[in-house]
Length: 235
Image (cartoon, rainbow, N blue to C red; front, side, top):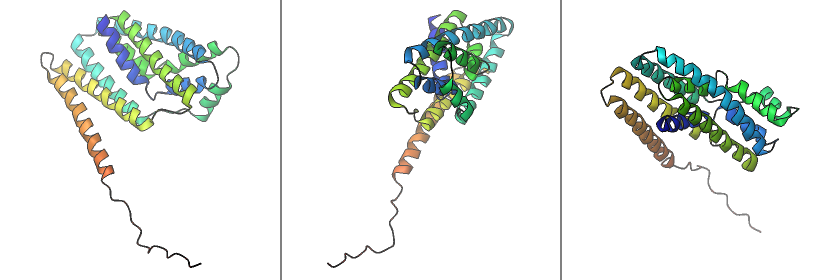
């Protein structure tokens, strides 16, 4: 159960970085008190993820472990592509988040409940619950989402800025790809360390690529103008 809690926390926290619901949390934090937003997110997440683990638990009981691991690997690769694409709020969604009327708590809870239905974090929770302790997945996924959205609330309430979008999106996508490769190869080669090795290779290649890109940027020559320096005017 503890392993399921930790795994689900890490996966869902990662999935929430840069997600639309995190942007919504940031927007709500600019209008309502932080504890009201946290309470609404917690209630909505608890309900949605309870449904998710229920679906995943019963699906997992009917699907062989090997097939579930392969399907899970494919799902996480899709999550990586989804995360790499990025997410944003439309003008209409942002106006609804800012101008919603009535009870703040009910507004936040209902908005997050609807936003999470069919979202990649819900699909990730279903996938995790199919092959892990469902109670641990429920607890870990709920805490992971609330923690990620709390981070967005802090940023929205104190700084009023988004996290560095490109860094968060690419980093989250790389970790999803590593997770997907690991699960996929673990399903195809159950008694082989190929999954762990391949996942480590994905992380290593990504780290090297990031360092090379940074060094190339740093070594670019500074453009020098061919125009002669202006001569000072005589007084």
